Image (cartoon, rainbow, N blue to C red):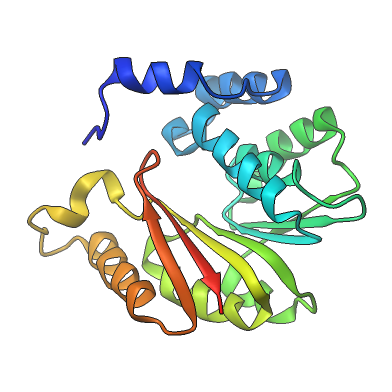
Length: 213
């Protein structure tokens, strides 16, 4: 499902900040060499993530789901001078492209790549995060949230991506569609959770902002 026409989406992108040249190059290489390139964050949402990060001014960022590193590099733009971003991905085969473009970006000493299951890695992290971006296995979103919540400072932001799931959240659900069912449950959980205040934005495939109270 396309929420906006291609023409209107093009207009919105054209009238938003340009992406850095290395991100444009990363997007091109992802589409040429990596499976499921539609998973990349892309120009417009990347600028939204960059802007949110710059507004928050985080000292520590956690990303769950690195893919080829586009969103991590966007989020890193808002880090405080000595800030650090930790990003987790289960697929070690993408490390080559992640490292290549982190090096091009100049954030080499400020981004730490973790490979493995986020649910095993997060408990070992002894950090307080100002900003978290959840964009990995949809069926595990609720578990990711519960793992990261105690590690987010009061007033910190948890972002959840793909919460509209190509519009499937408002369509009849296939009996075997566990991902859509999980997202429906997760979206309602965030709406009802008194520990956060939440707003869902129709950006790309849906982006939810939850502020820790």
